[in-house]
Amino acid sequence: MLKRQALILYALAALQLCVTVSLQAQTNVSQYEPYDIVLFGSENQNPYQTFRLWADFSGPDHTAYSIDGFWDGGTTWKIRVALPHPGTWTFKTHSDDPLLDNISGRLECTASANKGFIEQHDRHFVYENGDSFFRMGDTCWRMFRSVNAPYETHFKPYIDARV
Image (cartoon, rainbow, N blue to C red; front, side, top):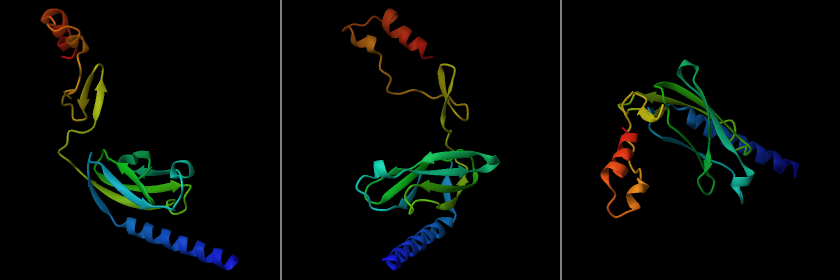
């Protein structure tokens, strides 16, 4: 029995080493674009309650983030990241599942022509590069109160508030 447990632990350690080595190869990702780090963990009846996965990212200028992973069915887990700064980023995983724990890797983030993430400035939203963000899908509920909503009292105040 003890010999069998030792073989299982040895196999788990070897598998983790293979995963770690495969992630050490540098991967190129584009700035602001989502990128999935795909990992494979242990089989479990309810991974939501049994396991937790997260990764600590370290980037240029000592930037650091901790990002939670998520279960994607079966034994597949993902950590979805969108890197904000070009340069070399490293990560290391942490998990209750030994197959997902202590995996490290490197991502090379290349500059992008994207405008960046959306930030709030006072009552307005802008992209990181300073361009205005135009909100789509906003609903003016006052327009639906009557068939003929008057321009001056309903529509104009709504548009003026969003200028």
